[in-house]
Image 1 (cartoon, rainbow, N blue to C red):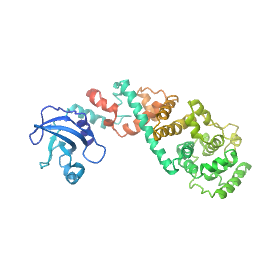
Image 2 (image 1 turned 90 degrees about the vertical axis):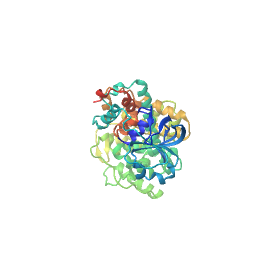
Image 3 (image 1 turned 180 degrees about the vertical axis):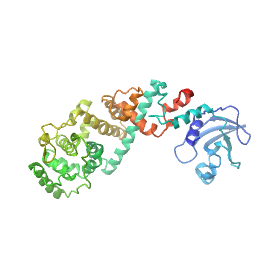
Image 4 (image 1 turned 60 degrees about the horizontal axis):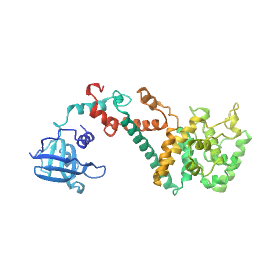
Length: 425
C-alpha cells in the first residue's frame, strides 16, 4: 500500500461504504469524500460526513499507519486544525485524537489491490500494454488531448522564463528558441547561448548583409578560432573582430560538437542556415503569429545556406556540390518544437484561445514523428496519425508510464477499475 493508492481509493470510494464503523465504535456515513488538496494541509478538503447523528464538514487526512500522524507532527500544524476524520490503512496505535479514525484495510476489494500491484511490478514498455486495447476511443481521444495540452503547458513555463530574462520581448524569445532548435539536441545549449550573446537589435542592423550576420554568429559560437586557408572564413574572421570590438561582445564559453553526427547536421551547416533565417526575416514571430495557415510558415522557414556552403560542410574542407537546404524533417522539427510551443504560450499569456487552437491544429497537419517511443506504441497497435498524436504519446510515456503514474492516468485509472484481473499479465 502507498499513500497515493490510499488517496485514490478514498477519492473514488473504492470500498464498501455501507455500515462503516470508526475505531471509536461510531456509525459513519460519507456524504462527500472531499476534494483532493495539492497544497499544504490535509489530503482532502471540503468533505462532509455524518458520525452517529452529527454532521461534520471539514478536512480528511489519510495515512498508511495511524502513527504517521505523530511522525509528521500534524497536531502542531495549524493547517490540520480543521480535520474531521483520520483515514488509515493500518491502525498501529491507540491514541486520543479530537476526531474519529476509520481503518480501510479490510474494506477494499483484493482484486483492485492485485491489479495495482501487477501494474507496478511489470517491466514492459508501458505498465498496461497487455490490456490497453480495452480502452475505448472516447477515453483515448480525451486523454491524448490532455497529454498534448500538458506538454505544451510545460513548454510554456520554459518560454515564460525566457520572457522574464528579456522583459517580455516575444521576438527575442522566438530568436533564442529558434537558435536552440537549430542546434539539434547535441548543440542546442551552445546555439542558445550564442543567440543570447547577440542582442536582436544588433542582428537587425546587419540582416541584409549575410557575411556580417554569419561573422557574428560563427564568431560568437567559437567557430572562427582556427587558422584558415580559405578566403571566406578569413573574411568572416576580420568582420567578426571588427564587430566584436564595436559592440563589446563576449564570446560564448565552450565549443560545438561534431562527433557521431551526420554532415548535414554539423553545427557549421545549421549555423549557416540560422544566419540565413536572420537574413531573410526579422519580426519572425509577428509573421508566424499572423500566418493563417501552416504552408505560409513553412515558406518562411524553408532556408538554404549561402553559396559557400554548397561546396563545404566545414571551413576549408571542400566537398561535392550540394545545396544545404533545411530539409523537410528539420522543418517539421522546428514547427513542432519551436513554432507551436511559442504560439501556444502566446495564446496562454494573452488569454487568447485562438492561438492555442491554431497551434494544436498545425500539429494535426504535420507527419507523425519517428523515434523509439512512437515505435513502441505502434507495436501495440495504437493509432498514430500525426504530430498531435506523437507529442501526446511522448508526454504519456515520459511523464506517466515511465514513472508508473497509473493512478494519475485516465487509461491506467480505467483499467484498474475495469480490466479482468486474470488478463493483466
